[in-house]
Image (cartoon, rainbow, N blue to C red; front, side, top):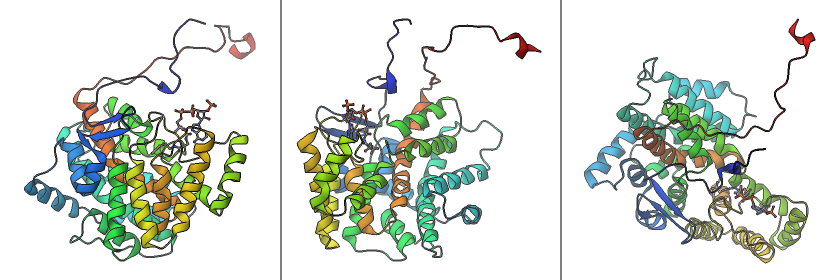
Length: 379
Ligand code: ACO
């Protein structure tokens, strides 16, 4: 075999520049367009962060007004999308339902057609805002359908997160809940060249359209090594049962070489920069819902892990139980991640298109040497 260096999983490989966000594992920090994410979470709404990720600057009041009007005007669930969702079996994973809904929106976009307008900057931006505006309706309806409930129409007098929760639960919860949910959306919005964003960029690099890139991103996000981990954390908490059993559960999991979901990260090795902010949101929720045992479980498993391996929680560890407390079904947690990450994915698609080079790495062949097809096969 040739002495080519193989970068399995592309670990440590820098493939391009990005100005969208900076993940710095040395300082455990994450900047969106230069702003620390925890400051954005404390001072901005998710709509402002979406604007920042797309346009590179926080909006002025007038820009935000125009942007929110545009977003609010597109919140309704399209009847065809609803019809397609209604045809899907209730057993379908919500990630697959949302992926299908995005596909329907793309196929209905008359500006897409057969003409290669796929990479037009303005159209890609408009399509991104459309998906951003419509995903809460899709995710909320997917959840309500599982509960056997009717669609709730959007309200254009509410901000993004309040409306999202209104469409899901049929009422707007207390502001502390809306704020915690909004923080989770901001923290999930963007994270440089993670697996789903890279997938979206690979698709964009072929000059395909933004819907296709998003659908690919959803596929990559579904896996438990990436976004699916927030669901898995909830399953873990339920499997453990009570905090006093966390240590024994972990011992057994590690002895059986199991990955503990919600722990570890490809880039951060000393903790995920987003965890402290999401943990604070989780603390607020456990106090509000009077569910201290959730926090006890969180710390029991974290402490048990800490005592055995230097592997720290990632964002999915506090966000999974937070979404459970708010009232979402476990299978809805990763679709919530889609609603947030749509901003980062599409910002990266536009960045990719602005300075495109087809993403096509090499591989080192390690199959059989060249050989002849047996004579019998040729007849
Ligand atoms: N539980 C137990 N052991 C772990 C974990 C974990 N969660 N994560 C890493 N390790 C161990 C591995 O077993 C391995 O040990 P070894 O060297 O003795 O074999 C070592 O740490 C290195 O792990 P890798 O999987 O090689 O590290 P990599 O950088 O490829 O993995 C990943 C990162 C995939 C996130 C991994 O930590 C993992 O599987 N975590 C659980 C899934 C998860 O929570 N994903 C969410 C990611 S963040 C997000 O999407 C918001």
